[in-house]
Image (cartoon, rainbow, N blue to C red):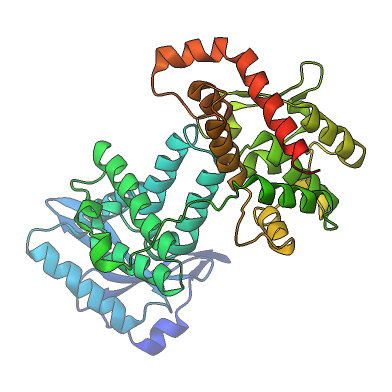
Length: 403
């Protein structure tokens, strides 16, 4: 018996079977095992029924009207050809799905996020956030869902060049460095067979840039002018005292912006910064000078109802923004000479030049990690008095040059 071929009109008008007022699936053949199935609810599906090595299989081809009669016949023909070549189209599709799922598990985004998660306890949260933002902005929209072992170095170079074209030359260089770390991790975890980033020469494909040192002031007279300007600052109250406190504590801007009252021990006159806020991921106990204590008492009435010592003017539940502190220097006329991070260089330079203190003590105050683990443990236990001495000297120095 010859199967009557379907027509576009018949497909369009086809309905489910109705038996005793109950709707059931209607299987309408087109020949060669191709069926249009009109479901009890009125949906229409294309399916290829066939036998392969004495077993029966059903291969879903698609839905009507997304897949027309003509397109269903083309897919049906392709499946028949595969079957004739000894390929089971159902098993082939399953294998492709499994491969696709495997690739999804090793997508660039997944590997990058896995890498960053493992590094999250080793790097500062501010650095981690910058790396996450770089990937989200420039990489994930383009290669985020692609299998990492299918990405080529030209893909990464194109993204870096796009970053460079918007004027962010340094960020373009850093993007390649970050990708290098991600690919090294992927290589060690058998997600790739080769580190393609090792084949990229930044000097050949990107413009060169100078990694500028943090701007700072080391001339005592000019430092005095800066300190007087800070005390006279008429901008945001929180910004003024944050900068003055930073001058006396010379911590990184992140530590000032996210400094909390719970970290201050006024009785013992120390600031205990928890490990997760430190670049070296170790607790940092910083002695506080008389001048630093005075600043805290000055700002306490303003922010005692906030967890942050120096909250944002936009709301006391928010921390200061990253650009707020440096913008203040510009408003005061010191923008070309000083940035918030510059207080660290200022202190380091003048402390060393004074010749009064041991380098180990100065480095400990700056929270620079000693590479020698045994010596590091010893130093942590024996520098407290010397650190207090340096802090006292620094506070008195800053106070004296204001006059």
